[in-house]
Length: 196
Image (cartoon, rainbow, N blue to C red; front, side):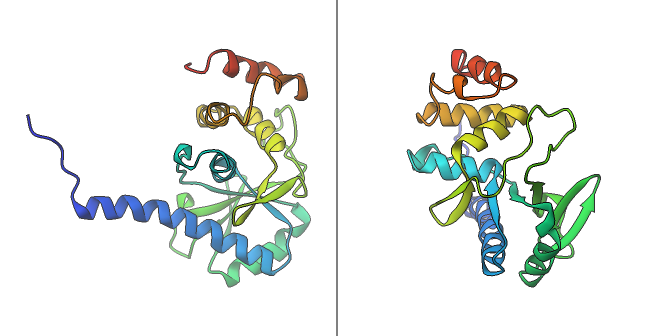
């Protein structure tokens, strides 16, 4: 039986894919900071930032760049991000900044609006951008609002992100009592059954 050998080109493409997401994140954050527009990194990159504060080897890569903005700052963000090479689009109810004119939606910065529900049926709205702190080189949503956002979405990838935070000790058995009644059972389920 022969072993699979990863050639150098494949390895370079894998590394480059991860680097492109990080570059997009840092470029967008820098543009918003320079324009003094309040924001917070959310989603998988916020989870990665928090997990890295405990265990860098437990960080999971993500293909998404998600940023929390106040709706009142959208026009200013359009201008600031355009200067950094991003192109604003509103597609199927989603506000995003494509990473260049020929980029796909996958190669974009996706926007969630602070204080608003992503879906009308969501149990809690997104937090405000001031519920954030600097972690490493980015401003990420604070841990508790991040957990609430992940439990609100509660897709499979959100559950995996919560499990990552449980695994490194960022979330423990004391957390369900801090959460709204609609979210507490979801976290309790993950704490009680981390293997699925």
